[in-house]
Length: 130
Image (cartoon, rainbow, N blue to C red):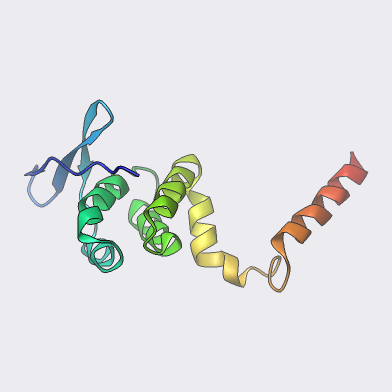
C-alpha cells in the first residue's frame, strides 16, 4: 500500500496548523491533529508510515473529528490497511466508528452472542413479517 506524505506545514491564523497534502492529483489543506493522537501514531506505526497516517487521518472532516480519529486508531491497532478501512467507514457514517470502538463490547444485544447468528435470526423475523 502506498501512502502519501504531507508536503509541508503552514501556520494559518495563529495556533491552528494546516498541512498541505497530496491526495491523488489534488492538493488539499487539512487541520492538525490532537497531540495525544500524534503520540499514539508514533507509538503504533513505523517511522516511515507516521506522516502518511497523520495526513490521512487529518483528512477526516466529519462530525466529532477528534473522537472519531481516536477511535479509528483504536480499531485499527497499528494496521494501516485497517486504518484505511475504518477511515472510509467514518466517511460513510461516523456513528459506526463510535459504536464499534466505544459501545460494541458492552452492547446487551450482542453480549455473549455470535453477531452473525443474531443477524440471521433478525433476518428470519423480518422475512416472516414481509
